[in-house]
Length: 429
Image (tube, rainbow, N blue to C red; front, top):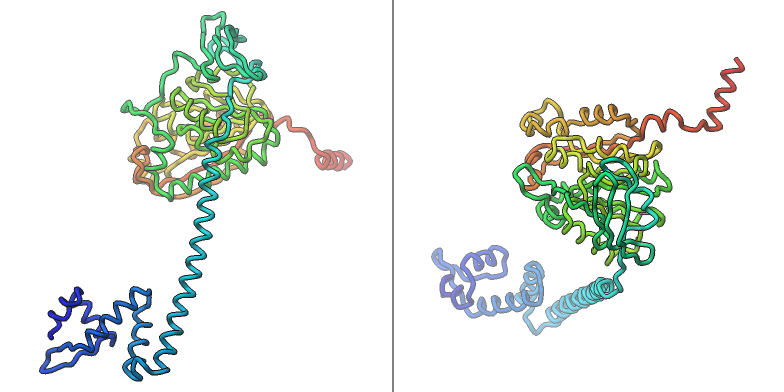
């Protein structure tokens, strides 16, 4: 039979037949420029298909067929070769089966672990009574009055808050809420994305760059501030930085989260209550400019990409709003995205935020606010096409990781023993 009929009977393509002929797996007779296939070729093809089902490679199949053609199927040489190949295949399959069983066991373990976390008793986090002393009216800076409170385990879950100047707020489900809070949105009115929405749209390169930036901020916190009592995070994707830092969070530290969307903030709170053991948190649903905190009450402020997001919405430097809350020896650390100045990328950045994507401008603003640079590192570049990052979409982006302290704290830094010895040596000259 000719190649077309042969291929049709075996339900394979003519190209497959020709490929097997090129490899020497099929050796049909040739007559007058045409190939003709006989029963032996049919038997070889069935053998090929059978061995492929046993996961034999074409090279191994050729070896089997070559021995059969040379010695016949009943010879000792053929049976020895074929048996050894079958046993080798079986041993490989046994090893793979064992590997898959081990993987299945680990998968079951991980599934059971996650399910057990879902079943564990949920803790509730309220506003800590111990932190009431750090509250201050955002309008007149006077102490606030609290009434009609629901208290459990030294935490406030429901309460009314007033000030003599007329300011009022509430604590709802443990969250301090300013009723007049205005959700920060993009200029077109759209909301900031949830963490899930943002991560689903972000590229792996961009995510990895953010992860490296988080790691460097964590390193700065651990190096520059040993035992912080209060840390404030400002982040347009709430908790994104905290999710990496929480395993390093000192047991006695109170972590403060502020977000102007109660629904998203409450979701983040429930997630923390369900999945993490750390107990000391404060949740504010307020405008950044109206945080009800006393001046110099914070040990650390983490600005994780909030400067760009806030400038995009408010055309204002967010650090200027929160810096008065930092102690004189406190730490400001953050991640500031930027494009290279005078580049084509910089020219097409929307004008309201152009300065806030300029590293030199950010550093100048920080210097004007009296922040002395302690650490300054750069990461990148990366080109991101995230639909939630339209102002940097398609541009070569860098991250500046900054850590600094108020200048006064550095000016009056205690003199160490080495400094004293140097001073004595100079004075003795």
